[in-house]
Length: 208
Image (tube, rainbow, N blue to C red; front, side, top):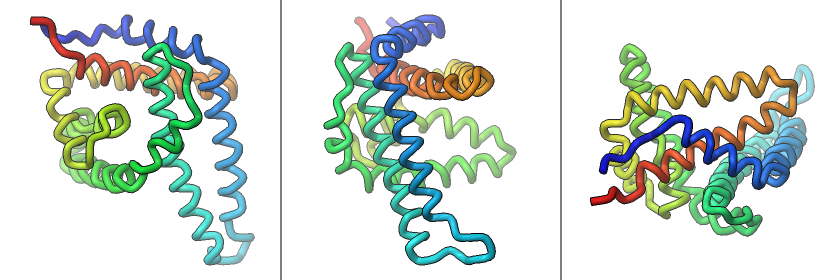
């Protein structure tokens, strides 16, 4: 039986997961945003001054902290989709993936950028086909090259549906921003949960 990406089912499952762990998932986003913003403010040079060495180091620290949070939060969302309570220990567990994720993110950005330079459409296509390298790293513990191969494999034949889902995710984010400040904090975990749910559906074994 062919796998199907039913938009309403994906949204329903993700929304159910968000409601089940709403305060934890939203609280993590708010807490990280506050910590990240405070650190970033320390890195900003004073008016008329150039960036100091300490400012550069803090900026690098902010970047590493952001990547670590993304990895851990994705793990938390997979736990939520599995009906489990998200664990703070996840951030320590995924820390060993930090370097691989940094390298893979740079590679992904370069590939999409080159594709976008070639009349945009190739960039969008490559972004859609390779986007699940991140989910594969977190959920399947794959390496850099293996994660890209995995994403390319599971998205074959689903480009159009994934593009429509991308538009839905963008719409959710826009609605979240319009719904005052708290709206975006709820929209972020919902879109991450949907991303994880799509990955799970694409990697689920097909019935014979």
